[in-house]
Length: 598
Image (cartoon, rainbow, N blue to C red):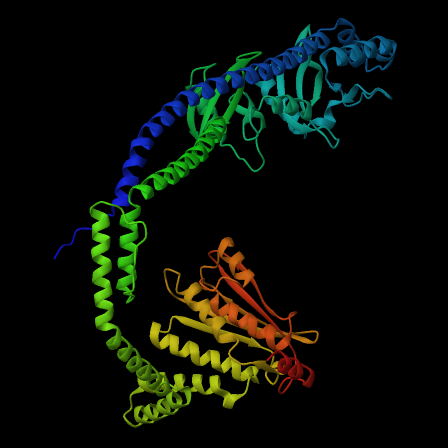
């Protein structure tokens, strides 16, 4: 027996054309993509450097300006003498005498340094100048974070202190630089603390401009601590991790690292003093975004080229094997039992002679078996009618009842349960020829169906019902729920890896209508499949039963009733059935409409 896989001549020719063209094309595309990717990557690094240094220089200039202005005001002789005299003598008059000169100096420094506030905190609890916005008692600041930062830094020997972002008794956050002024004759005698404030938003705006992409992160590190950061929302950076990289990697160079399980490029540089580092972090995926666009575009172009190649190769191949295809088609035609074949435009070659001989052979076979074939068809038709009569639903129901009795007598529990459930299922399906049954009976119909399925699948299907008792006596078109439940089980629950799940049926009144929900916890339906089902037109899909059910509801109740769906892939599907609420058979006007339709 020959077990070799059949490969047609057409396939061989198509494969040859495809390989001869696509191999060089793929090699060219790969080389082009690699070269262009390197160019894009270099350009991206160049842009990143430009943004990095522009933002770094702006921050550096801003901080240098603040430090220079802070030194200027801290070393101002007029302020020093006024503070020294007023505090020493506990006298406000000295400050008031110098008020105009000090105010003019403050305004000048605010403008030149672009700071928002300048505050002088006087270290004297009994001294509080009236109506002077720049002078405040220091004792009122003892509990605030900025003062504690200055206090500890001063204790460690640092006289110029940067304070982390803090709220300055307003609705805005500030960063501050503070310096302690001492009596030059006794450095243990603190006269005041001068603090200059800059709105945090001003610095954040500068850092924002230093972000090359939306997902980039820019920050300032001061004394091995993240001082200010500008990161995407909900992004948290481990400080120890960042600081470690600042310390361990070479300054002023781009490095590739993994941060929070994500590949990024990273660069840092010192600014203003060794205590400050400006840091920029850019996700690698953002840098490669242009390459991804190029890759997608090339993929589209390659797909178009492949389609064109396949089409052209198919045209050339078809013209080459036209007569072979004709012969193959006629042979398949004969294999289906049709022996009356003929050929047009037979070529003058070996294939043409084969076609003539095959035509003559089929004509002889057709004459020999035609009569016998007709007789066999008649016999088959008679056997089919007999088989259909044997599986008549009434005959099947009565036979199941007999099998059920035998199962009870012989204590065959599984057979008894299966046959009993199946007999009750068909009993409700027949319903003595009635088209409408009570909702409670329709629910029982589903219960017997699930019972049968559980006997088959090992009790893996659960059923939960939440039916308002007032609804049980209302009537519904029979066999509406079963196809929906069947669809939920076969295409929802049994598609899960566990093949285990629950079908939940709820029902409630909605105005003059009844709404029944059938929910499963299966695999759900993807958007493409759901769109097909919602059109109720694709009978080849697993929505065939749903399509028939929807048509039956609309036929009996009208176009405003039927099925609607909601689904979430991976979690399940809900089918809503809306019908008019009525007790007993259909109302006369609905029956009349049905008669007209039928």
